[in-house]
Image (cartoon, rainbow, N blue to C red; front, top):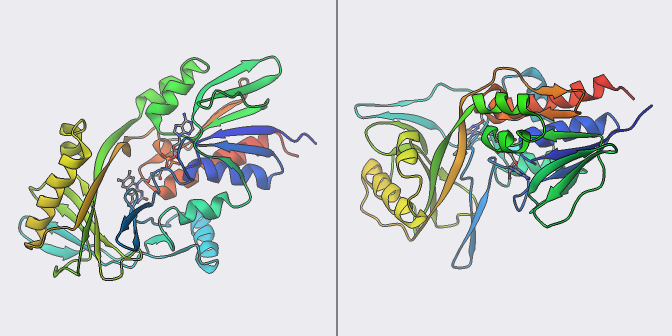
Length: 331
Ligand SMILES: Cc1cc2nc3c(=O)[nH]c(=O)nc-3n(C[C@H](O)[C@H](O)[C@H](O)COP(=O)(O)OP(=O)(O)OC[C@H]3O[C@@H](n4cnc5c(N)ncnc54)[C@H](O)[C@@H]3O)c2cc1C
């Protein structure tokens, strides 16, 4: 029986799914993430307004559970209180009509979108605020060079669970053929804006996919501790985000805020606005296989860019890689 020491780079849903599977198989796993917490693009941002701590899910908005294995995990997390049904009704808005989006169970984290990631990370060894700069191989195995200037201890295997473009950078010096695969995938950017109104606003939608001539692709009210405030998340279209990728967050918040007021047909100005640039937001071109595993090098690769732009697919990718690594060397 051989217990392996495995480093996972990235504590998004894919990295955490992989780490959970490996730990369940008995391996020793350390997860590293450059973010302040876990979840990656399944993200939650807090904003202080007066005495209120307002919460915004400014990345992924909700997730589906079509895969049976993922559905059973979702069932367990719902029972544990970590996730719940997405509360908003979703409307399709075009220039000419408004219609409801077909019904399908949609889920969110109970205390914010990163709730699912927190549940997956429970019991795992995760080091946050720590970017992996390089993976270095010598006769003893792998070590990671960290942004803190430190080097990790030795690992038998490394899992890269970050967006395609960032995977390619890490992989190029150590596994060129895996890097080539990552370079074939493509991720589009997305500007997100967060608006706070001092009182409820009168609109006839709770959340909407927008397919009209505005810069907006998605708008949704958020219910995170809002009290009397009305809080909204806006996502710009891919084209608009690409065109304006280097603009300041203040300018973007203002432009998207104005587009929202036009869409909603209201004159009330937001009390507070901010914006977040997702440089790598949604997978546009995926690889089509759930993971890659190079047994000679001992490197695995997973992430949403393997299968497509959804939390569920990121989880499937990470879980499948964790199973494959465990099966190549069962305990
Ligand atoms: C605006 C937006 C809207 C979306 N809407 C939806 C939706 O409604 N429904 C849905 O299902 N999906 C949605 N998605 C997609 C969904 O969020 C992703 O598919 C999923 O979260 C990807 O998970 P992942 O683990 O593959 O990658 P990520 O979540 O990106 O995780 C990668 C992690 O790696 C870390 N990292 C990167 N480089 C390094 C490094 N060198 N060292 C250490 N750590 C590193 C990052 O900090 C991050 O935490 C949306 C995404 C965005 C941005």
